[in-house]
Length: 113
Length: 115
Image (cartoon, rainbow over all chains, first blue to last red):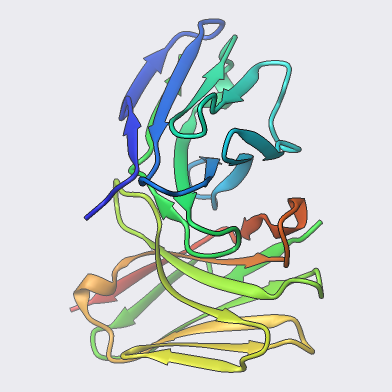
């Protein structure tokens, strides 16, 4: 069964350092999402791609966060510099068609010390 | 923008009993309402969804109801089993291919099934 792949699964870093997360969506899924999930809360959309284009990044803290999907396949989410409040699970999801089923990866858990 | 509120935040039921989770949404333009289940250490997984042109949908022990007038929708799980223990999220999404179509999640309900 096809899955969304994410790495790393766990990342511990010190504040002010740079971190990066990678996501490989299910093959053929044109839409890719990055969500942030703080412990005990629901996922919050950070950025949404359709192929290589950003559809929505209104909730992405652009002073420190960046995301790219250069060839419209895999994607990278970067944080620089990391802050204590960035500690969370970063979930990647993909879908065939916008507003249909999201397929989530297992997430990348970030701890900022 | 859309706001989704979910309650209760925690729910404990006896095995075999029913569980009900309720959500409200704010944007009357929203027309797609999925429910996701998240098990420990995993990403959320879709368990059922409903569109605004349907009032109720059922899939085995799981059912979802939608009241567009009141802007609320509910998840019903009957004959609960230990494997139903997880965190459940409701969500709402608007139509089309724009920022209005992004899926907004509720805060989640941690469901525990007592043996």
